[in-house]
Length: 187
Image (spheres, rainbow, N blue to C red):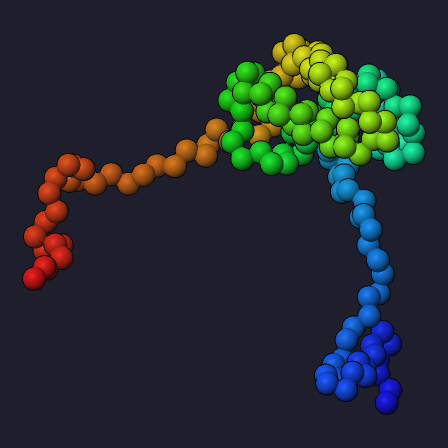
């Protein structure tokens, strides 16, 4: 019997099924990085900055290089946390001020650091997590101390000014009783 390519018949005497063979094995698809995110990141961390260089290095060498330093992990975490914010990933309530933005970036940094340390070949990096967090915080504070960059980060996910919703006004006050014509009859 001829079947389309990639199909076979199960020859079990109890059950005869048509099964599909896998076409390809997708181990890890590459992450999606849009050009918009990359260009926006160049505004905060230029391509030649130590954070961008660390991020590129970690992306290519995390699985192979057992000598990755805590400084590299910390700078990469700062870049990745800011990139995650710029892209708007997992951002449900946008920050209204600098302290809320700082809190979000610290939370993203912690997520990135835990992910990097769990993937790194050097198990000693787990003990250096506080140092890596300090390095990442220092890099992010440099960005947040610049008022122009801070303002652009806060504006990035803020609602537009003309997005105010006008609710219709009702002639009856809210505390007024329900009119008898709208009451539900009860037994």
